[in-house]
Length: 296
Image (cartoon, rainbow, N blue to C red):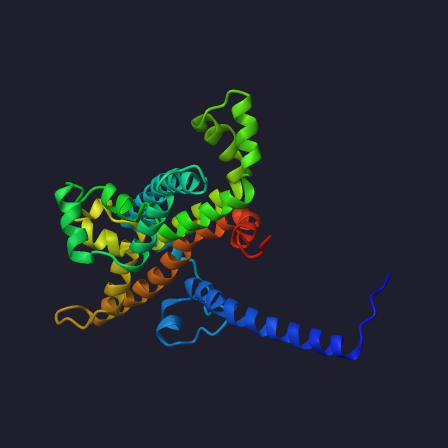
């Protein structure tokens, strides 16, 4: 049966669709522009000819990216940091949030107050660096993973999920069948926690993949640099003054063109893993962000 709309509904739909279309264009244009720049020639990039579509299309930028060894090293390091850090963070978040969701845990308010305190106050960069140094984690993978492994915000979100989706009756029924707390967590709670695990994993993975400041502070060996730190170096090289004396102007200009093409190509390549990951966790993400929005 065809739905009939009154005049006010039609006006609302027209305005709504128009605003959504404008918002979509505003969000998509930077991404389209970035892809177009990655396929454009260096001359078109330097002269600002690229607007929407690629100008003088070429694959030289991606060939340069694939031939640049440090990018692949940074790519592998970022994947290791992201996967390892996400696993550690999810495990710690579950271990902290599920006990806090139960009413039979003594000192629950004290622990929740401690987590809330860390959301508002922290020691700062210098004490954190000294602590990481005293723990002998400088220039190791643990300096990237452990300092940010547990987020108080993620703990609160996961705790809310468990309180709303794991009823007390389920725990009581499992105890009648001889199930202890640890087995209840592994066999029942975790399988029912797929939405919140997917949401937290996405948050942590995005943060670790895009992070470069921790690596800049704690890592000294270039072979351990993540991709974002390699990309930062490329961007810095592209913005430096290339007018040194004694260099052939033609060679200098060609290197400048390659630097611009390498910059855009690297940005696109570095964005691919999260673009591939997001569609698989989107349905869980939508459910996860609705946690706590409806009471009752």
